[in-house]
Length: 101
Image (tube, rainbow, N blue to C red; front, side):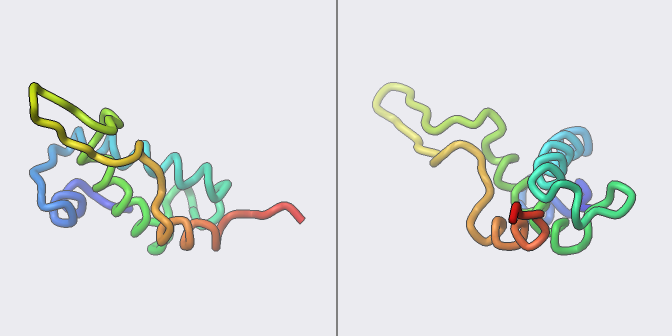
């Protein structure tokens, strides 16, 4: 399971333990829901799912409000789409997802 130190090292940003726990907790819950708990042992993700949690947490940390863009006067910043898993993350997650037959 990723830690605050892992998230800070991966993102290159200063991250408080409280903020990291909140962001990692949200992404962990989303990963668990997507895989329906497969890949978790006693509530802890395996290494592959931990990697997805870390990369998605870093992305969510950059834009916790889910803003697509901001503007102030003539200045505009576009952040991209609201939070979701990337295609590489989904490739990992879908290996664990139970599919209907």
